[in-house]
Length: 637
Image 1 (cartoon, helix red, strand yellow):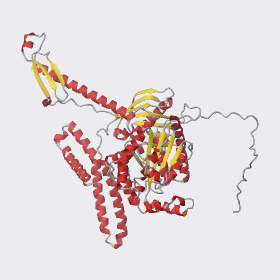
Image 2 (cartoon, rainbow, N blue to C red; image 1 turned 120 degrees about the horizontal axis):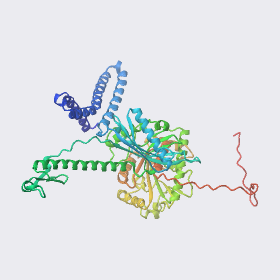
Image 3 (cartoon, helix red, strand yellow; image 1 turned 60 degrees about the vertical axis):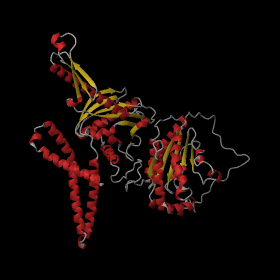
Image 4 (cartoon, rainbow, N blue to C red; image 1 turned 180 degrees about the vertical axis):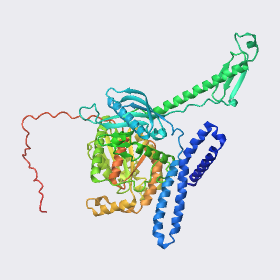
């Protein structure tokens, strides 16, 4: 942990001790508002104090175990205790980092839950009703109170719109990440032909505002002017400076009162009116902020803006905000088992607020360069086949949409040798129309191409309308292999890094959907794959003398990659890093990410009816030439 964070923890622990002393003072106990505020602050710091105490005990256990190492008879036991203490300290360090995240003051309060049907007609309304039931069941599990404020039922069930108020401890903290567009893929109850539809519903989480305290006005913020009243009222009113004009300098609000005979009475009326005006302005500000928050949360309700997908045929739920968060417990989640989502969202917030915490390196470009050990598990063959088939069905639908809309899609696959670029391109295109896609893997530039503008040879291969092009290595050769192997000068590399953001901006502004993926793998995995290819006669052709030379420059490639990512990771053309230490897992993750970043718009398939044949089916006839004999298999071989 960084020293600055350690000092922050110590300061918070000192504040907790100070609060404990303040709460014991009679003067504080007599002031209910102050006592309530201090008690709330004390309760918020209690988990941190408990974690610090546990860390202190763990450090003491570690020191005792270290001392035991000197005794030969206890050394083996000491090693086990040292390992356990270190594991406990790492766990507590992570807990303390979580507790350091600035806490939202509204976390303990209640919420207004607003669920509305989005794209999808009656099915969207039915799904909105399912979501409302899911949150209601979750609230019941937590012991919260749910009151339906308003509801507009759908024609075939569910709700077009429903608003519920949920009260309890920590409601906003647990549900604030649920806001956004929720997408569902299933066969609707209203579908008679068994086709899968995609619909959406929006969820907005609005925190319940506490009753505002009376408006406090600083006398130093007021300019008070007196003047003589005008109009009817007698000699006293017209001849004395009884009228009052008060200007609130911070807001510019001006109020007057001249109806009373006394200056004090006019001042009292003017101050009441000023307080009411300021309170109304504050209420309008809060209402505008709430409306803006609601609009920001729910967006347009379109399926492409989803934060989560509920896929009923696969029993899968995927959260698109947290990388790799997919569960296969759809019935349980729809019955209110939302804790995995709440925990993962809060952990993701911790990583965002504290990028220096364990498992993530500080990364100003927003690229996750590292992975935690053991995060990628091998996928069994049958599971992989099931998952890749499902994704390839979506790829076919995506290609149909691209052709229908005239979309131009370019996918850049970069990475180390043996990472798996070719296999990924094959998995993406396996079931696509060969007339619609191209895989571009350019050889060494010819003498003519070497005299051209560097990007010129790649421009020729950019996609046309309705086409998908995959670059198995691309213009980024200049910042990778050409730089590391000395095929490009330092001046050429620096010029490339300066030019490529503008080049890609032209592509994107011209209507090309550009996706850039870097496939990552450890050197140990790379060595295994090199050895496998060398021994397999069907794969040996993939290895070249340059590959063997590059194998010895793993760290040089790492440095070149980091410089390239820092210069070319832009808002219009961002990089996505995919862990390819296990290639099947990597392929699934990459294809899922690609599909999630494209609009979820389905184009109906056109399958005309097959007219019956006229007469019996004809047999193939041969005249001038005859077919070659059938391939004979020797069963005894």
